[in-house]
Length: 263
Image (cartoon, rainbow, N blue to C red):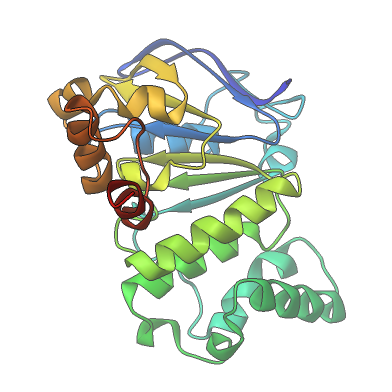
């Protein structure tokens, strides 16, 4: 499978000869503890930190000449930036990126209706953003990142302050979009958001230390704990039960584990 987004020989502050390949139409997760380079990498990938010809997106090299073409193909939702909303109402916030891209009003309304139905936020369109809790605001940030139909969606610890119900709903919806061709890069410290990933990279001290499938990475629990990543309870429990031969596989949810134990 060809890559759609790549970083080639990045040398910026603590990143030294850093390389990364993100496959097209896949869900890729980069798990990383705090202060390991997550947000800096996000800023580089979405052109907030300027670099010349280090990042390549869908055949477009990121430099001064290509930056506008590059950023229209990418959507970014991050938990790190302050004052991310420009308007009071949800509907106006969703319309703004499309206005900037020159969409006519009837197309803007059509796209807002379509995406709000898909993510089931029709009841929020006329709400004031500051009346929404942090979980809903982060949900809105993901929707905003998708409103212009990017080819790649980058998530930077966006699930940190999202409640379990919203998190599970959004991950389910993002998986549906991935099946329709959206490439997703989930950069996160929350390991319970990576279960649907096709490949997982471990970023530590500004370098990719290892990579593999979801189970292959999560089974390295001692290593993950050592670098400061918290294993989800259900994974930790599964690993302990598997060690004592009470189960023969790792489970991602408690219901399936209970069913296995009661057999």
